[in-house]
Image 1 (cartoon, rainbow, N blue to C red):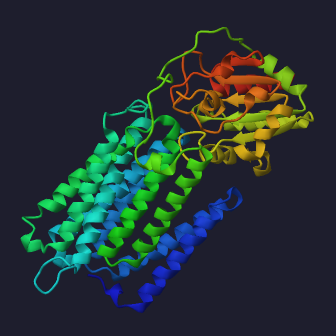
Image 2 (image 1 turned 180 degrees about the horizontal axis):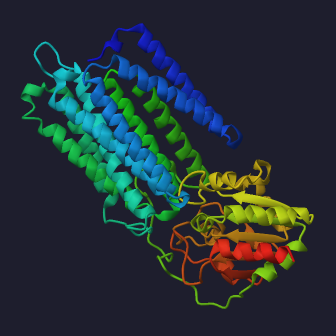
Image 3 (image 1 turned 30 degrees about the vertical axis):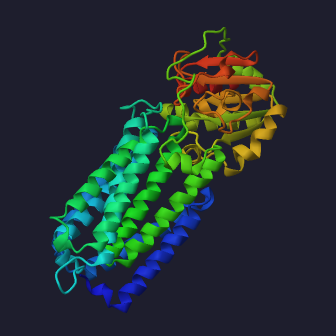
Length: 475
């Protein structure tokens, strides 16, 4: 138990930290205010951590400082070594750690409830605390195992295609109902009559299993939604543990993260024409269709060169650039901005089109373009620019695939069917940069755009090809 349960100054400090967290979320809602939002978030976390260190009495201050120092070293080392291309899987890995932390806190409280001040006069865990423990542990376990699968899919350790188990919906629903049933029964029965805690361990094991079962049926095209959804889960797990630890800051922060992650997931599902319930239920309704991983259409296509692209774009009135994960892999954002600047200097209107799920996590392309100092006014979301392709001279696609694939509009058997995509096929000319014709998009679907009459394939490393285009523009 900690002093801040009765100390009004501690409550005020946590309230101020919560206000800073809200301001952080507000700042992060727009690129121009994102740095200010980050500063608010850091200030709020500093207040929360210092307040907890000053008032906490369970562990000694040196022990906590050692733990913080170890975490700081690991965090700084990771931040310096991880490339921007690996950011999605890093986020998934961090979510797994938050989930695991919730599981460990719940387990510690279950094993030593007296130390956490959650027992009644008879020595049994309070009924409300039993619910908090079970839900916090279950959500944390789902977050952990689900994030591990998401990491494996994003990192290439597992196939990005949906893995559809027979009867998966019945299994998932039955497992979740079992967890809730055990939680309700555990809350109603005193710990002394609970049979050595088998209910806690059983619910925990089922939660680890359901996290795995929920994520493996979700395909690569929906992975950005999964990342934001797991972010929401980690927040709710932290909030539940905040009640157990009597820590207002954890409750506020967890609720903010949980709610904002859920809202972001819902917004992205709407942008992809996906059902929110379908995605969080583990790819409910997903079917195996013609979009099998690695499948390609054997048809004629035209190969272009950097000189072709430079000459045609110099003569254009408007060029729309559509970046994707391939740009991130090649780290081509800086030279891409240089190409855009050269075209602007020659009187060409240049715009950047960002799909809500371009890359492997929400905002992936926005971050990379901001890193390259691409003006915010030149960057447009799908709904704001899609109507312009019919009047556009050149669509310049760099490392994107699924977000420009017409199969999403026409092929009901495709795993990306129903997802809004850019209407690049309406542009007068299309330049499509990818490494080779042998690969397909992350969702495992071939792209009709490759074979269109107005398309020229620029097969090379994205950065090297854009560098060659820049050289051709300069001559």
